[in-house]
Image (tube, rainbow, N blue to C red; front, side, top):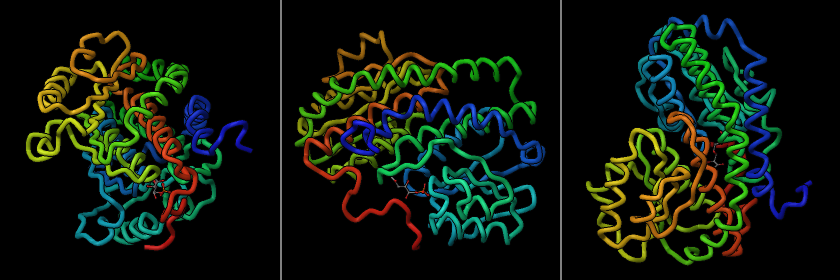
Length: 358
Ligand code: F6R
């Protein structure tokens, strides 16, 4: 059932062109008019989640604020549950959970519902608790994810959040039909662009070989790719047990830059978007302190080679769509580092696929 792959995680990474495509199709063929009617008058959206789903929520915030102009706050479910949140009848609380069973996310949503919020869930498992307990449900269409580390469900969550933001924006008249179509059309090319990145698996494995003995990693990104830095760090630590931290690149000079020396690999997410120049100068700061720079950059960007020890190229896309591509090589990198170190990537120590206890 691993279909020729060594691990479920590897199979699930390589399934992404299909699961992204299925999520686009599934999402577009199940549009719930009542949901978008409600979203028209929403004036505050909280998104709550744990782990990788929380990172998807952080990316979703950028899209929903940009396209639908709804203020969004993202919280860890375990924190949201115990704080004095402000809810009224125009507040929507969205829970994101692959399994749909995560206790913190479930109970936080139930509490918010009791306080008068409308609730919405984004889940992968049909019939899961979360999908039954919320007013509205959106799905990712990935089929079962067996590997403990979330991979294909993360990119599908991103796709669903983007489509949700675009649909909401159309209803609220905060984007034009032209912009909507432009992004939609480009989204349809994402599966083949992911396929391109997956072809670099051997190259990424060689790179993994060169850095597998590092004891710490830093991951940096800006704006919509900052949550991807967080996700890259989480993937690496959970399956390889190497300490890793993700940071917004602009925050580096406020502390973490002190960590940089010639032993520290720094993974820098730097696509060709409007934050390129800012990110580039952050990378120069890392290089000036002799950090080992591993850049994830857009095909054709030659200048990045001057400040990087390694470059993994990804295909070009529209600015808002980059996170769906930039995360792929980070999944591959952590997979290869962990397997080269002989770790059990499908069943990492101390972790469970579904966390039904608080
Ligand atoms: C990381 C991972 C966990 C889950 C988290 C939430 O790879 O798998 O961090 O993302 O436990 O799980 P769900 O999405 O099922 O609520």
